[in-house]
Image 1 (cartoon, rainbow, N blue to C red):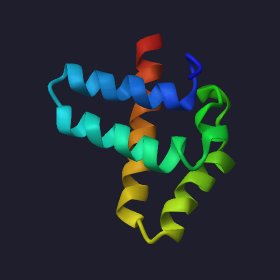
Image 2: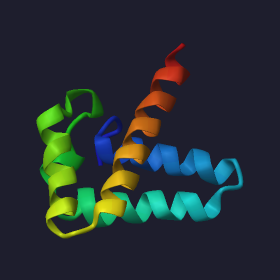
Image 3: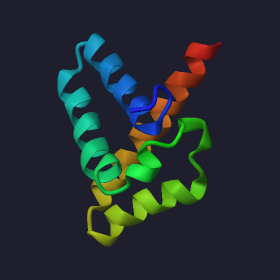
Length: 92
């Protein structure tokens, strides 16, 4: 697990949710990331988060839509967007 990988970004976001008392949401972030990013696409999960491309994101979302998991695809998109935004906000 690289310190700044996409996988680490999701982990950091889940930890933030836990610190905010949102344990159920944190568990959901961890489960979605594990089941739909880390396990099926370790090459994307282990990339530095700043190097993840639109093409990579499409691969992740397509895996869910192909599996008729549209709601989960929406969650993954939302979790990813928020995780990146939180990382940007920390840098300010």
